[in-house]
Image (cartoon, rainbow, N blue to C red):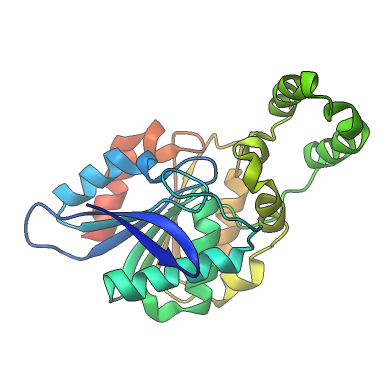
Length: 252
């Protein structure tokens, strides 16, 4: 079932799929940057077969949700999800969040723990990227920005930026200011505040949000368990058998 809602002043497309038998509870899935709720299609099928009701949201600018007219910050997303839980689910819920969705879930859980029954972070973002690659991107952007304003070179810009790992920034040009706002936020203090039971699942070969981030989240979030599995940044797609096995044990 699909539904359009105004949440925290933003128009978003939301989805609901009912459990096959008597429901064991509610799971809200939050997707990463540059994708949409459809990334969770196979996971949604698995969860409904395990008799959970599943809710999903296309974040503004992705899937069937229109891009926001003004740049957003992380609080905008957190409050959007808060309003969705209060209006549509109307009870505490299990949140499973991937990558950027993890940022939103961490912020939400730190600020409104009463809404979250259990938090499951998958290859989550939440720290500020540091190091040579980010420095290179900034230097590169300053040097070549005047040149890349030429229309004939726009496709070259995309190819070169992809080479140095900025696909997220370019995945939706309307959202680049929002993306810049969000990646500047470090959520270390929010992680320290979380007391809700938290499960952290990570792909061992993740190059986007490195394994060391998962281990640091485990250290910072008091009531957490950590699992590393074969796979990359989308470990739930790379290795569904191991991921779903862990998830089933967590939920049951």
